Length: 264
Image (cartoon, rainbow, N blue to C red; front, side, top):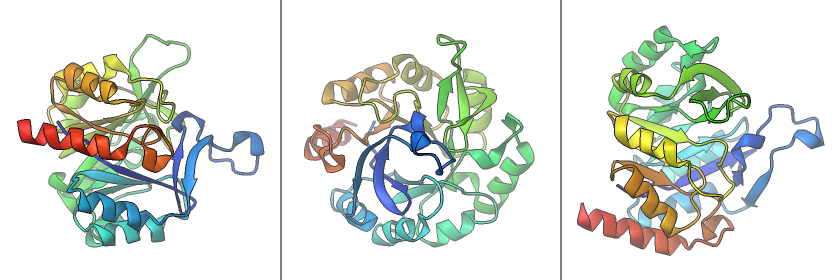
């Protein structure tokens, strides 16, 4: 198990956004996403920090348009050290790998009309290889069923699919990718604790490496992910880190990560 760093980009800036508040209608002030943190510090600076600390398998997520230049600068600063996601499809995936990404992260492109589009998925696999593909199965429960299954959501986490995150789904999609990335959307950016049942599910049933994101706020939460995920679920932390305006010290997280690596 390890800590995987992140760089979230929105309108060309490094930001930390409450995932459940993302909306594609920028014309209305009331629908603007809730932002925990934003900075003029370049994305490349964060990438260089992760390189310095030998953190691998992190990701750059482009939330909407206007992020290409910042994303490419991060990949250039840490070639083969970061994955890239946000608007990736079979037409541009290879160009992102050529720009220095270790993997491309894909969600929306492989889902259509609420279902997995096998043709699109296989097209991606053929073009970049499953070993360079991460499937983002970020998910949330439906409001009318707050104790029911977690459903994959697409288009910046706004659209529900009919695909539940389950043993069967993980096994099927695990045949087509190298890793999963799973944001617990309802707690993403809220620093309110992890979705314990989701972490348990991932630890029990993911056939490939999987990274969980959402709600981590302390070293205790990190230890809880390790316990519930049986040491098989990696984690990423955003808003809680002091480098993103939070209280959890980045240096403490790196120290924790290094201890996990030593004990592996």
